Image (tube, rainbow, N blue to C red):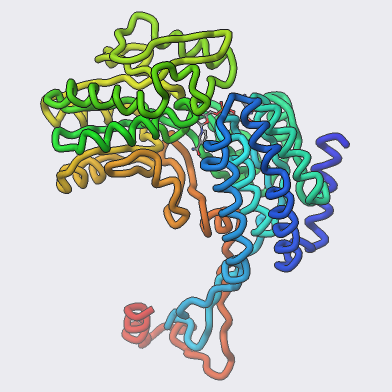
Amino acid sequence: MTISQLVQSQKEFFATQQTKDISFRKACLQRLKKELIKREDDILKALHNDFKKSEYEGVMTETGIVLSELKMTIKKLNSWAKPERVTPSLLNFPSSAKIYKEPYGRVLIVAPWNYPYQLALAPLIGAVAAGNTVILKPSELTPHTSKVTREIIETVFDKNHVAVVEGGVEVSQELLARRWDYIFFTGSVKVGKIVAKAAAEYMTPVTLELGGKNPCVIDKTANIKLAAKRLVWGKFINAGQTCIAPDYWLIHKSIKEKFVEVFKAELYNAYGDDPQASKDYPRIVNTRNFDRLASLLENEKFIIGGKVDREDCYISPTLVDEPSLDSEVMKDEIFGPISPVISYADESEIDTIISKYEKPLALYVFTTRNDFAKKIIQKHSFGGGTINDTTVHFANHRLPFGGVGESGIGGYHGKRTFDTFSHKKGVVKRYNWLDITTRYAPYKGKMKMLRTLMKFG
Ligand code: NAD
């Protein structure tokens, strides 16, 4: 079936209104749950084949997250989908008012490679729950995971309802050139702009989950041991190929030396003497990304690491010492196991450096001073963040997850994923047993009543 035929058949399927039936959606999600559980080992193997992601990280950051989102969605779907009664306006007295949730229609999801299973499935679950048809385009850079994902979707869904289209940039462009009712894109800022332009052609609403250069501020009062341990975890999980990984550190000069010493010990605890030999340390996804990352290390001084092995797509956990703000490593999002470490003496330097960049997807601050944390959090605009840890704001489905400015548009997780894919239709029902005449012409003598009604409206 060509893309054009598939898009047309999904259009016809959506027109049958079948996806508006909540029990139909639930049955599909139940079948999906069964299949995801059945194929978990295949998914974990595929992730390992794609970039040596360990089974443990696979469960923690991919299959486990997807399954818990799916279970919650099945459990809550009735209440999420129910029309929501809101307080009627006095101006409309007598009346009642409700918000109806309706599916947008035909959804396109374009996914990245770095959490290739989770970032494809989590939005897909929300889109199906909200009653849409879906075409998912997974990343071509993780072909093993894309293949298992396609097999799962083909087993569970009628292709007129949900389908996977594999392929690279050309396929993505062919899909984007069509008319959609919603586009959900996760990936780079550069491609995000291409998606936004394509969507503008048909005024299609979008969610853009993008990236950015995420600062991590380490104050002189930080708990050094815990900060080091949590930074080792948050930076090197997935070998730093995480959209919300701390990118560069801003550390108070007075604690830098001590911090680095503790950090080395924590790194050793996590990955041993040689992270390349550790089963828990993934690889860079391909040689193109490897070359990009390796080139960032040219002409830099290292506090830790700096070891590269192109054959193995391996880059050791690396801390770059005091790079110039104009250096390559400080230009764009790093998206790998490299962190520039920049020390400051005066707190005003923190603001100057953070403000130099576009609004990041995440921001982290390690401190035991509440006022300091509050100041940083309130002063800067960023997608989301954590105080005294890294990346864990992602794990709370009650928090919106998404960017701001160049790091993205929209947010999801938990109920917000369902909301993302639902149009909210506000409807007022008027009653006929009374008709207050204030709004009707002639207006003479009604101003006082109008003002009173508007005051309480
Ligand atoms: P990418 O933008 O290169 O690719 C993402 C998707 O877009 C892929 O499916 C790819 O096939 C497609 N694509 C690539 N070039 C295209 C083009 N010219 N036209 C149309 N489609 C195109 O991103 P990536 O390398 O897969 O992922 C890394 C980026 O994603 C990083 O910037 C990271 O920060 C970001 N990211 C963001 C989040 C988030 O939730 N905000 C999560 C993961 C990754």
